[in-house]
Length: 214
Image (cartoon, rainbow, N blue to C red):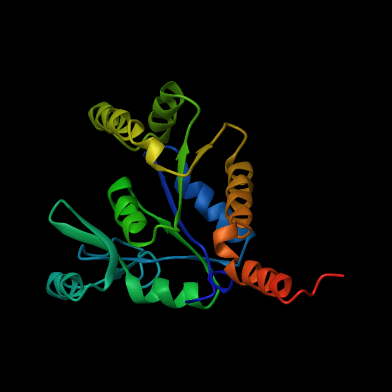
């Protein structure tokens, strides 16, 4: 049996569109270099400024489907005729190296990850209210009223599934840096969970059975 204490923690971060999770993640990674933010694979074409291996691994549809068939994806989904997914070997390698891995993915993928890795930590980022979420979407100024309405309707559906997550992190108006530090605190506290420290428990139990008590 592998020593869970030596393994990194797999964390899934999700949130409503407009919750600010992307900004929070950028703040977290810039402040704490110990985290490894997983890069997803996709079959869509790169957008201007995007680089292969940075924003995504851009691969052909046939290659992606081969990864599905060979069980090389931790999670995947299909949106508007394009696949998106997380390559499993990279994640497993980093975890075994003791690195804490973070996936920024949607609910569908989060469920797949939890099924495959029950010990994964699921964190959902949300604004304090739907009114605040609408305000943030409007203030972005990048989408039409119709698109914003669609995102709010989707948020209403996702809100009913928030209880599936281990932690709910409210991204207040205080800023992404504050939210990032609270996210950091959650992940670090997970290192002290008893099921992640089996070797310590075994060592103490073994010494007790030997009678090595003063």
